[in-house]
Image (tube, rainbow, N blue to C red; front, side):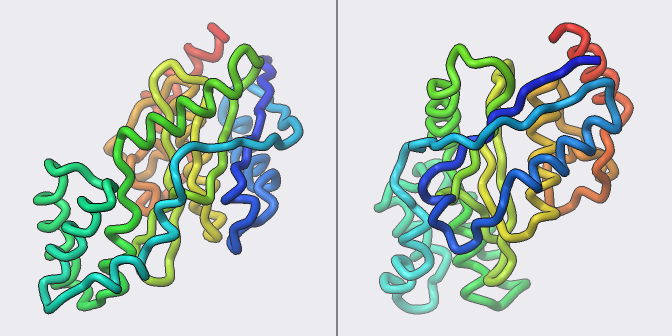
Length: 235
């Protein structure tokens, strides 16, 4: 049986956030789900501090945007303000405006729209945060999971969800925190799956389905199960 150490890191924003909770418990719950499916055991080490990069972009939402809105052209105003703040690139603005228009027609809620938009994180920012965690964890054994209060995705005015990411070949993952613990657990398992060699699945009954909100199971699909079992033997 393979034993792997897990090192949790938390940035200052997470530690000070109003939605902070004992992440170690949720982390151990998620890892326990993986242990039941594979010949592997995890040991969670002491939580360490992480000085994550970038300002707290979420601090300027939604109030920062609300103050700049003019007239009824909400999607355009939101996109224009985000471009000014450098939160999205020019190539993304048209697509995001279109998506916001669609959501606004269905929901009829400005707060929903503000939340939908504010969760967007550029791939550049994702990479920067992951690089920061990898440098901090450099030459250390085990897998690093970084929890940040800076980057989380709002899908409505009152439902906060987690967002996570890693990259191929990395032994680190970043998790955006949320008070919805069941989503956090799903995202931890999902990102751990990537670190262990799993890819995305089109099956909503697989934990490797890309959209955490639509995942209906904590189990890995058969294809990813085989990939992980193969990679575990190489660890």
